[in-house]
Length: 220
Image (cartoon, rainbow, N blue to C red; front, top):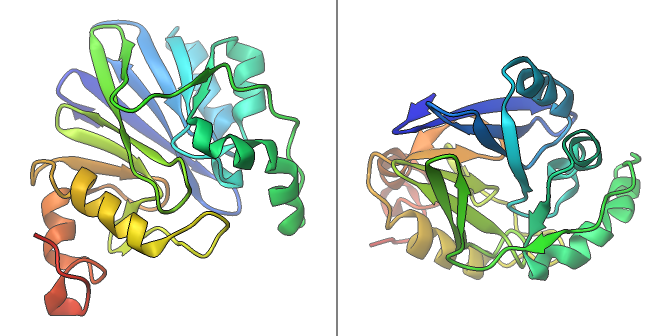
């Protein structure tokens, strides 16, 4: 789906049905990978087929399902892996995370660069701004562009991220949603780590975790 000068394409895979995203700048061959998970092979095939120049691998957070394809993507693309410093311990604990689910994960490459808040990620003539959104994990971020936001596991269509994993905090997550997501334009398309895309306006009106008329918390 195109949002302004960006084209956002979703790849879903794995036992967690995790969404990974290939974001490209229309009119150029530049792009970035966001949260390459189990569907990384399909993503990389499209990158090769369309001769896309990937600038970076960006991780919204470091839970297992968002990391499953990082090692392969790094190996084949040789571009920097970027994550917040606050989520680095989770990143290094990927093998232990996998073991908890009876899974294994390929050894991850080192984090090349730590994301900074309000950092601008450029690719071609397009850009996404890094915004803090902790709560689902300590260092979770969202990436905000013109008319679109890649929100990881902060919010989903009709739901919000879980906070019962190590480092999760419900009150912190709710504050992140209120200050960083619901302040975006009503028509802003939200691309989540699981499930279909949605919009700020739709979630404000219908999400039971946000809408006081449906039993959720009060949000301005």
